[in-house]
Amino acid sequence: MKENSTNNVWKTNTQTILGLLFSATRKNPQKIYCKTHNKNLTYSDLVKSASHVSLELRQLPKDQPVAILLPNSDLFLIAYFAVLMSGRSPALLNYLLPEKGMQKILSKLEPSVVLSNKEIINFKSMILSKDIVKNHTDVIDCNNLIDHTSENDIAAIMFSGGTTGLPKQINHSNKCLIKMVERMEWGWPTKNDEKWLVVAPFTHIYGFLTGVTNPLLRAGKIIIPEIFRPDIIINLLIDEQISIFGGGPPAIYQALLSDPDLKTKKMPYLRVCPGGGAPFPINVHENWKKATGLTIHEGYGMTEIAPISVNTEKEGMKLGTAGKPAPDTIIEIVDIEKGENILAAGEMGEIRIKGPHMMTEYEGNPEETALTIKNGFIHTGDIGLLDNEGFLRITDRKKDVIFVKGFNVFPREVEEELLSHSSISGACVVGKQDDRSGETPIAFVTLRKHIKVSEIKDYCDKTLLPYKVPSEFIILEQLPLTPAKKVDRMALTSKLST
Image (cartoon, rainbow, N blue to C red; front, side, top):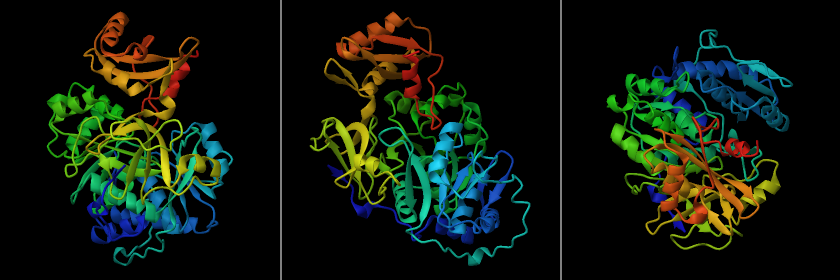
């Protein structure tokens, strides 16, 4: 078990997310909060626009949530804070959701309206215009903003895959989210006038905290790229004098590292590079440090609770780990089979955690809640270990563990070995049913330079135990990614059955 003391937590005097916005606006009304490729939005502009939209939302039933279906944009920010100002509950839907999945979520959610930039079939839609900042004449006294929300009000409805992969609704209160904001600030301390570049979706807990809430603490400026393309991101890091790069998963950093210009360009203002969403291969850490001179501060979190742990300058750094627990957060490693026996340092098992910023339940789903929360702990479904110094190392998802002839094969171990080969740029290992061994590992790889499959196999034969060596190596031009920019294991697994 590992727990961090409450004395280390950074605290804000504000109790609600709307309160964070109002506080920043009162002090810095004309500062830019958000910059897109063609527009600047000041703090006062945001409050005025959100207030204007909130007037119409106040006519809707208060007991029904308001859905937001928008990409990262100034419109998303206006919509989100408009819902809070109206006293309604904002439900954040990933804009890249396939139509079928979106309809399924909306049918269960039963929103009073969907705020979007397009009509939504089967549901009442409110289209937000790109010119909304220009098209209203509201006069707002930024010195007299009143926050009518409370710490127990729902501040964000989010959706998690849960343990079955089906979307699970999580209603995060202001109180819970503020504790998340405080622990993010503990993990990645900021300064006044920070400039944030965030590529993760605002509907993802990491993108939400780094792109919507935490910049408010010190009236920071958010830069929203029009699209994600490595050369565009690198130029923005330089031209916009970005100080915090909300990169997220390793795939984002790997994409930037693939751009040959990265090593030749200087980013003198960049100082904080958070990482999370998936375990980082050691070579990504090393290559980023070599290219930029900066350290990726890897952390760990999930929609249910974030952050859980972080590598910090104060608490210590160790490559290949997700750091030490956030304040008041307990991390334990338990046996994979039953999840009841607490394992010793260095032993690998399922990660379970609890803290003051964890969810209380999956809304309307007691069965899934009971599978996930046991004895006050969230059972994450992630496999890992705590070392003797208290650093958390995450290896895999429990569902991704490959069972070969009675042995557990953890994909990350095989992937790390593959990535240590100078010719391999990307790797993902998944399991395939096998009549003789139960399952067998299959490796999908991308290459920096040409290499024969037989050479890859020979390399693995020399570095891995026999049952861990993939039975097949499939070379791809690129690995498929999920909307959250994580390697899409399900897509790769489906290739094996086609």
